[in-house]
Amino acid sequence: MRLGRWLDGRHEAPEPLEGNVVRTVAVGTAVWFALFVAQVPFYSWYADRGHAWWIWTCLAGGGLGLIGVWYVRAREAAIRRAARKPDAEG
Image (cartoon, rainbow, N blue to C red):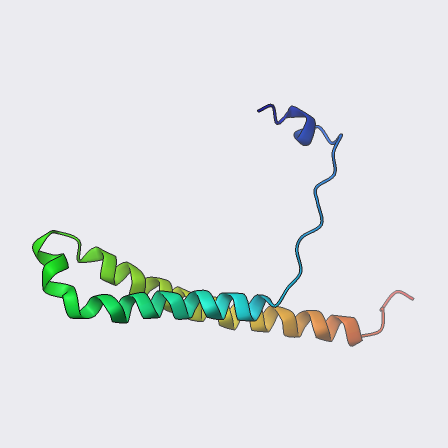
């Protein structure tokens, strides 16, 4: 596939999809934590096969997801504040 036509400006990028970003990130975070909890009882099985990192990856995904939830909530609050604030130039 040739990307030149997209990169030289002949085509505009599509508008971003809008949706409930906080819910999306929260659900993804919950999935990571659920995977962590589901795998913990099998830790020795994973460790015996050298795959214990799978468990810790799920925990890291859940932790990073919590940061993501905080971030998108702060972002949406800032967007709402900016929308209420009158334009400084006019």
